[in-house]
Length: 144
Image (cartoon, rainbow, N blue to C red; front, side, top):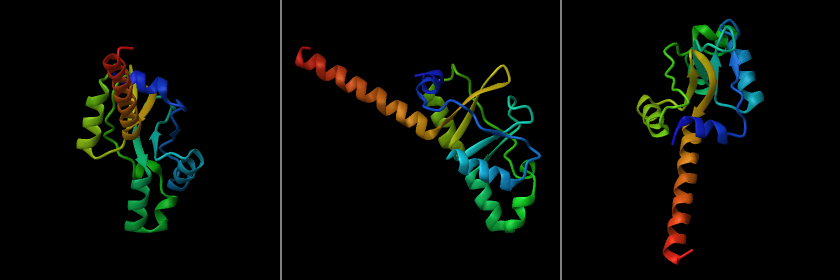
């Protein structure tokens, strides 16, 4: 299965981005408003510069307190963003996220952001694929 199949199956395909000069408080509000766990940091809404997760925010709050909410996103974002393309194999993306201990991966084509996948998206797609295979095999066994 390719990443493009996962992107097509997602109910919401919009990638939420935030500017690097936005505050951490704005990032937290954005995550809450959209009910998401990660926001891509981009100055132009297209080129990923970093990524910021709920986990990043919670860790900074625990470490330095609420003062961090007034700081810029770029001060706390993960700068080395691991990405994939639409033609990446989903299982490889899943392995990369698992090994890297992160849950979201931006999908980039020619340097431009085209989507984002999560561990949950990949697992859901794989479970659906296994269920379809199971149904097909049962049909073959039953002679349908």
